[in-house]
Amino acid sequence: MDSFKGFLKRIVESLNASGLDYMFTGALAVSYYGRARTTVDVDVIVAAVGRGWRERLISALQKAGLIVEEKKLGDALKSSYFIATFKDSKSPLTLDVILSKEKLAKRHGKILGLQTYYQTPEDLVLAKLRMIRATVPRERAIKDVEDVKAILKFTRVNLAVVKRKAVKEGTLEILEGIMTQEG
Image: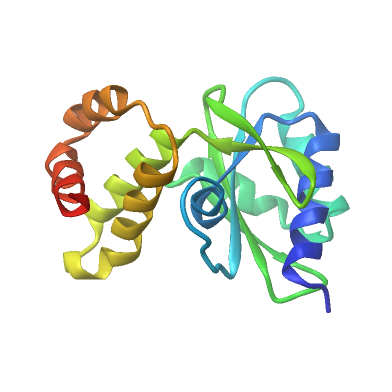
């Protein structure tokens, strides 16, 4: 059975070799920007644009040792969430692939000594705010609140951009509440 590091290394190497526009989000991105987080899956956003993206993605996932059911990509594109989950063939871990219809705004970084890409801290904070808003009861969103606090504390974030977008998304009150808690 492969370790989490082995799983992650295979994914990064395969995505880098594929030439796909991708970036990590979720717990990996929070760990990069804010605080170490444990996770049982890896979340990656892939731009589903241009010629051949689907074939390159399928090939990259297969080379990384994931069990690829092509139907999952089609189902993800038809759903409102655009997420497809793939199981690893060498461990109990999974990869959540979030498909985007747009070019990705991302930041260069490293993981396990490999070049990779992460969702920008601004977009990650906004995604966390949307998750907090959608979580009922709100107390169940403690992990996401702590993630936002850590990102704001340990990373340079363009708060003007975050606040402007939070107003449009209806999450400014949540952001301000978190910032008040931070003191």
